[in-house]
Every structure is written in structure tokens, then in C-alpha cells.
Image (cartoon, rainbow, N blue to C red; front, side, top):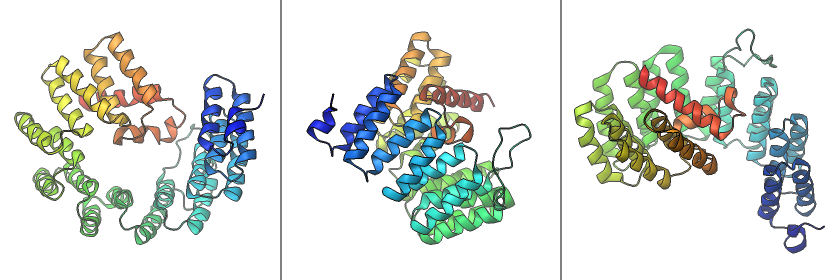
Amino acid sequence: PESPPRRHCPQAEVLWLMAAKEKWLAGDVDGARSTLMEAFAANPDSEQVWLAAAKLEWENDERDRARVLLAKARDRAPSARVWMKAALLERECRDFDAELSLLDEALKAYPAFHKFYLMAGQACERPVPAPGSAPCVRTDKRLGDAAAARDFYQRGLRRCPKCAPLWIGAAALEERAFGATKARSILELARLRNSGNPRLWLAAIRLERRHGNAKLSENLAAKALQECPDAGELWADAIASAPRPARKGKSLEALKRCDNDARVIVAVSALFVAERKHAKARKWFARALALEPDLGDAWARSYAFELVDGNEGTQQDVLERCVAAEPTHGELWTSVSKSLEHARADVATKLKICAQKIKEAEDA
């Protein structure tokens, strides 16, 4: 029988995608393919349909099919997102030469797209795989070369001087190569050119903390909150890093400024956990999750709490709700989800890995 989207509104891409996803989730991969083929017929130049078809093959380990689809998409429906997905596929397939080659081409077509510079810099920084690890294609001399990574970051900053992740990536490269001094000067320049950016302030605060400059990190934190008084990530960091007797006062200040910021609510929840006020902690975690269900770090913190102080029922409840929410943001969450090692992990696995990392950090 004819598909409902074809019969009623064949150009409604979202309906095709929903129909295909429904079949996929029901285990009918061939049915999902057929639906997407129909979608192609009605929407031959749709980026969304091309990417959905590539994702279907990718997720079902038909990587060559996904590669062919993404190559066709670059021809029929070219966009920065299509090029980015193609490079990510090659990274996951561990063909690092192809990844970097695609990024070179992508930068010619989209020279102002900051993620390409970031991905290329990270590819060049990626260490040589350890003996015995999965095989990879890695002959491009730029791979593993800090100078090549530096060049990509610098080119990116010339094109995208407002992009905080590029400044932070460039500073992290210099910190690894030369220590704090060069990284500090990069982050100072970044803040000079981008006033009021809390991510850049936070990177500078953490840099000093890592290098044992406690007084300097405190001074930077105070200046940061003067310049960005409503930045939840700065307040959350201030609560977590304050001496234990000062944390309650700091949390009250934070809640006056941004009482609907999920990161602040999670930081306050952690105080209740430390004080063994489990019912309050659970209530505040629930509030954070309701405020920002896309924040993976909030789910991870809540799950880590339940693993220690909850029971099987509360643990399963957080896990199931997290899977339903499919979070994509959060510093810890993205560090796991974007890593090569966990690229194919499902939401439940990512949640458990993040919770384990939280436990390890607390035990350290």
C-alpha cells in the first residue's frame, strides 16, 4: 500500500523521517530503507533525507553503503553538515587519511564553518594508536603533528575569531606542548576579543587550577562573575570549587542570579548529596532534569547519585528516562559520546560510562 506521506504530503520531510524511524525502531530495517527510498523520490535534494539514509546504514554496520550515500549527498544536497557527517564516518572507520582529506575539501567549500578546523586540529593531535589497537589508515604526515594541528587552529581563528571552542582547543594544544604560559596568553587574547564569554573565562580558571595557581584562579573567577553575572556554568564551577564551609553561601548567591539554570541546580544537588540529604538531592536532580533534559551531565550526576544512595528502582527510573530524553549536551557527556572508543555506544552505555567517570573523579 502507498505510504501515508506519499499520499497526503510527499514534500513533508519530517513525516517521512518519522515513518522510517518508527520502522527502524520496530526492527524493520528493510522497511525503513523502503520508506527512505520513497522519500528520496519525493525529495531528491533533501539534506535531512540523505543524512537519515546514511545514518540507517551506519547504525546497522553497513558502512560502505553509508559512505556511498554520503558521497552522493555531497553531490546532490551539499551542506556543511553533510561534509561533517562524511568525515565523522571515516573517523569512526579509523580511516584517518580519508577523514583529513574530506576536511581539507570541506574547508575549501565552507571556509567559515568552525567545526571543520576543530575536527582537523583534533585529527592532527590524535596520538599514534597503541600497539594491538584496532587497525587504522594513517599515512598522512600531518596526523600526529602538533604543528599541523596548530596551523588548523590558527586558520580557524582567523576565519572564526568569535568561536570559543577554537580558542580553547588552541590553548589546550599549547598547554600540552609548552605548559601554562603560552596557553594563558592565548586565553587572554581570546577574552580580549570576546568579552562576556563564560566558556573562555572557565577555561582560564581551570588552566590556573591545573597548574596549582589557586590565588590566580580565584581572582579570575571573581572577575568572570563580574563580567558574566548570569552565567550558570561559572556559578556551578564556583560552588563546586569553593571550600566546603563556603559552598552553601556560594550556592545561595548562584540561585539569586540564575535559579533556573540546570548546571547550578546540579551543583546545589551535589551539596545535598555531600550533606547526606538524599531526599532533597533527588528532588533537586529531578528539577535540573526537567529544566534541561538535553543536558547529559545532569543525567550522569543523578544516576551516579542513585548508584550510591538509591536502589534498583530509582536507578532504573533515571536510566530509562535518560534513554527516552536522548541527551546530547554537557561537558562530560560529549567527551564520552564524541570519543572514538565510545562512538557506537547507546545512551544507556554512555550514561553508565559517565557515572563511572564521576565516581572515579570523586574517589581520586
